[in-house]
Image (cartoon, rainbow over all chains, first blue to last red; front, side):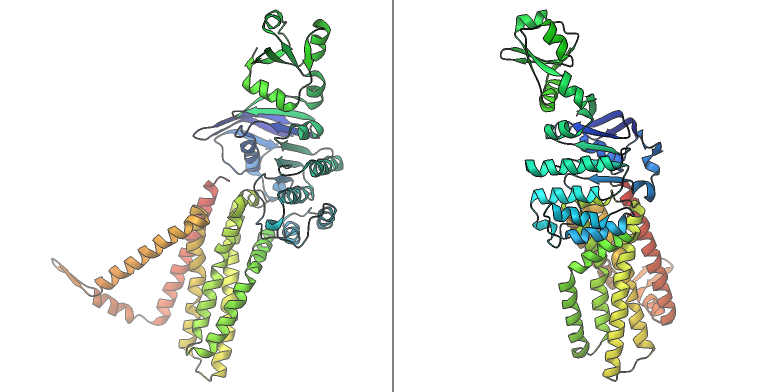
Length: 283
Length: 223
């Protein structure tokens, strides 16, 4: 389990303040706008930034006390950072083999060939999609307990994205105790892959729930001003003023469809939920 | 540390054209210049900078964030940079010494204590170059480190200039009379062996201090 207890990190114009637990055997999606704190959270877990307050533990061990053997059990994909682009896939395979005891070179090379990544070409000559694939396949070729993926599907077309998500799913099935943390701007990735979705805004986790429940029980209620006044708001999480009246986010779609049969109730994507939670008013 | 060494060796391999050119120039210099020991200095200086070159490669495309997620501690990263720089510098020193000595034999030049004291003198820059470069790059980054290096070289040259001026003046202060020429004269009579020992000790102290400084700098850094 990853346990983050009272993590506080301050910059001049931004403050992260997070307490959260990620259970073993789960894929957790982190969504939020640019600058919300997703990458800062990941960097704190990975030991890339310092923090004065809070404790981060992975399987009951403080990440600040991590040694080589502990760090070897964490894999990651950084959105804009990787090995020097002067390297080829073969160079990367050699470095990873010398770095991680569990790195499976043959499987990595085979996966790269399957995804049509040239083995001898320099990374700088790859397309953005090829670079993204190389990073993910590299991380998936290590046997880890925790996999942190910061925007791993950036730059990928819809087919490549689906292939990568499928690789991540297969990786999770190999060892069901693993924890995957993934951030993405593409809500469909989160919806397809994650067990739980966390929404982060202005350095705080503002909301989280099972992704299945988000897709089955959450909905947008579209009501005019009169109906909004009379509406039972006990299951309304947030609302936003629109031209026609109000758009309300509920986590009990069934309740409103049974009690307000004429009401317009629409399914929502994670992005749309995020818009209401972040930009709307809380009840 | 093995993974980091493999990474840096692969970066050094990227410089193969430059290194081949360096070797070619060195071979020409060996037989065209009167002093084959020039080649030792030339090769050592180029190869001793390879460690700082790998720092620049690590930094490219914000690569340091990813490298710091590898299972090595920041301490290991710093030690590897110094170790790699020494490996490259000492490798070049051994190779160039073999080439220069062979050339001395071929040209039938005397190989005595003076020759060997010159050869061993070139060990010092192998330690000093990474000792200067690595903390500067870690502190300022590759791009800004060039400016910092220019400033440091400027200060060193200015100090050298001031010292040469001081060497030509005598300053009287009450009962005390400072004669720089006399001081230089005293230094000149110190046996070469003692001077070599003093330089070795200073070099080692500087190298260790540089490693400790780099360690302190990298521990504070956020990626």
